[in-house]
Amino acid sequence: MTTVNLLDFDLEGLAAFCEKLGEKKFRATQLFRWIHQRGASDFTQMTDLAKSLREKLATTARVEALPVVTQHESKDGTIKWLFDVGDGNAVEAVFIPEDDRGTLCVSSQAGCAVGCRFCSTGHQGFSRNLNTGEIVAQLWFAEHLLRKHLKRNERVISNVVMMGMGEPLQNYSALVPALRTMLDDNAYGLSRRRVTVSTSGVVPMIDRLGTDCAVAMAVSLHAPNDALRDDLVPLNRKYPIAELLEACKRYLAYAPRDFITFEYCMLDGVNDQPEHARQLIELVRKHDVSCKFNLIPFNPFPASGLLRSPQPRVLAFAKTLSEAGLVTTVRKTRGDDIDAACGQLAGDVKDRTRAAERMAQRRATESPIVMHPARKTIPQEH
Ligand code: SAH
Ligand code: SF4
Picture 1 (tube, rainbow, N blue to C red):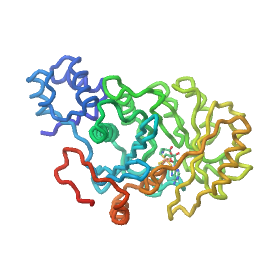
Picture 2: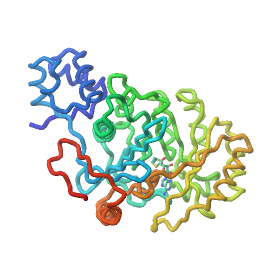
Picture 3: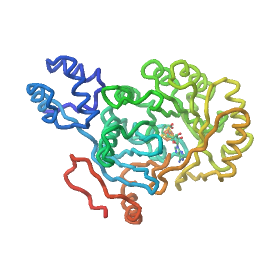
Picture 4: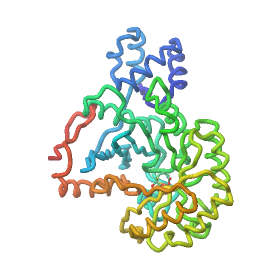
C-alpha cells in the first residue's frame, strides 16, 4: 500500500487527513508539532498520541525527507545540500549563517522554465515542479540537522528565501501550503517578514499570493526598460515592467513589509551603465512603488557569455540610486567557493559529476558529511 508523506500537508491538510482516519482534528496539531518542531519521523516516538492512532499512521503515512547527494561547507560557514528528487534530477538548498540570523535558501522546482540569460538554473531548462513535501523537506531536514550539529534546542533557521532553483510563482499550488507550514506556530513559526518569495514577475500570482499567503516579496528586475528585460528575463514579454510594477504596488497593501525588494544582477556592459541607473530611478518614481534595491554581483558561468560588473561600477550604480533616495544594498556573495552563490545552483546530474570533481579538489575546506538518519550508507568524502 502506498503511504502519504505527511510533509506534503500544511496544518489544514493534516487535519483533513486525520479526519479521514477517523481522528479528531486536534490530533493533527500534535502530529504537526512532532514532525516540524521536533523533527520526528518515527510514529512510535510520538508518545502522547494514542497507540491506535500511531498504528493507523504506521500503515497509511510516512515522514520522508529527500535523500542527500552531497553536503558542502564553505569557509564562510555557508552549507549547500544537493537533494535527489528522482529521475536524475537534484535540487539545492543553501544555509547562510549570519550573526543575527540563519537563512535557508530553498528551491521550488527542478530546473526552471523562465530561462533567464544570466542564470544557470535557467540554462538547464525545466524538469518538474517540486511538490509541497519536497519544498518543506529542505527546511525540515536543514533545521533539524543543524540543531543536532550545533547542539541547539532552539531554532537555527530564522529566515527562508525562495531563491534557490526554480520560479516559485510558477509552482503556486505547491508553494502556498509550504509557506503556510513555514509560518505556522505549530511548525517553524517564522515571521511573515522573514519568509521571502523571489519572483521573476508572474503578475497574476503576485496578486493571488497577496490574499492567500502574504510574505515578503523580492522581484528580480534586472533591467530598467522592456527591451533589455525582454532579453534578460524572457517572462517580461508576457508581463512587461509596467504591469509588474503595478502588481508590486497592489501587493504592498498585503505585504508584511512596506517595501518590495528589487533584485538587480549587475552584468558587465549590459545593465550597469549610468543611464540604466537613471532609467531605474525614473521608473520607480513614475510607478511610485515603495522599494529597496539589492544589487547582486553576477556569478558567472561559461555558458552565459556574460561577465560580472567590476566592483567600482557596482558601487557607482549603488551611489546613483542612493543619492536619488532609493535605499540600495550590494549583496555580499556567500559560499561562492562551493558554487552556492545565487544563480550557481544547477543541480542536474552533470553538475553532480562536476561536484564530485570539485570536491576532490577542495577536500581541505569541506566539513565531514552529516547525513540524515534515514540514509543507510555514509558517503566517504574524506
Ligand atoms: N526564480 C526566482 C527565484 C530564484 S533566482 C527569481 O528569479 O527571482 C534567485 C535570485 O538569484 C534572482 O534574483 C536571480 O535573478 C538571481 N540570479 C540568478 N542567476 C544569477 C547569477 N548567475 N548571478 C547572480 N544572481 C543570479
Ligand atoms: Fe528561473 Fe529565477 Fe533563474 Fe530566471 S533567475 S531562470 S526565473 S530561477
